Image (cartoon, rainbow, N blue to C red; front, side, top):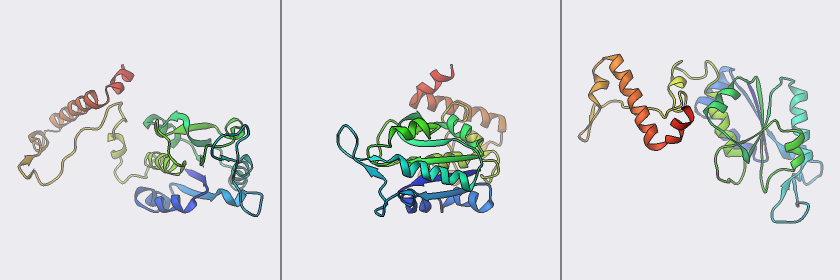
Length: 228
């Protein structure tokens, strides 16, 4: 998979992508991630990427020219097809199903908005999909982009060390994940549930299903309504 991320703060994302699972995915060659500096595609000597909004109002709006030029340059250098995502509070809320869908793409181009947003012509004529990581507003699209990259990359075949681990995550089967325990079996008087020490794999499977269902019913009953 190839992922291009366009931002005015490339160092911010390059730092995130140098650690953990994403670093290993890049080193193994299963995922290629390129972070582009949008200011390199500005047309003036001040490398301006924003301007005042037509019609007045507070804040600044990201100009269309640098975004179009950056995406077009990405595609000239690598013609691999794939959607252009804009990180935006107005987008569809990102979830595990979206992560699975995007992990099947050969290539993603992710635009990180800033200021009051981007010129609407970018949304209308360049972007394939607007994506939101939640019902709140952040100062820019860099952190949401990092969230999307992390969630998608870990689903790329071969990225995680243990083949089953991605299949056991929360939301994979529509439920939250079950509780996890490790050594020691007793810590400050709190003991690991006996069933997990029993060696009875069927009993353990049933316990985990029951715990996942109970946790989902308690914390996210909306997930159960969605699956009904």
